[in-house]
Image (cartoon, rainbow, N blue to C red; front, side, top):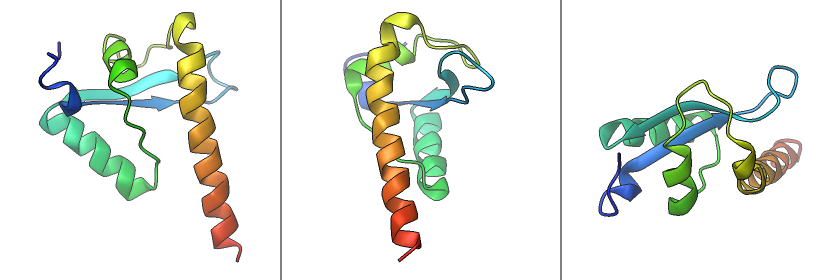
Length: 96
């Protein structure tokens, strides 16, 4: 479990497909070098990254391939809104 000191060395990846699950799912999580690799893969894939130490601490407690609990829906909805906005901006740039 991360300590306050190394919390920035934590990464959690989420995926959401409403045709497959009711809620977003933790698709990957890691600490230290694994967290760096998760962020690297996200950047290479064009996936927006949001830094939120409070949220990542809560998400890091969830097992991989498990849906996020209902009490985190609002916080994760903010993250998904940011991702959708970034994706729309990128697709708009690609069309110009």
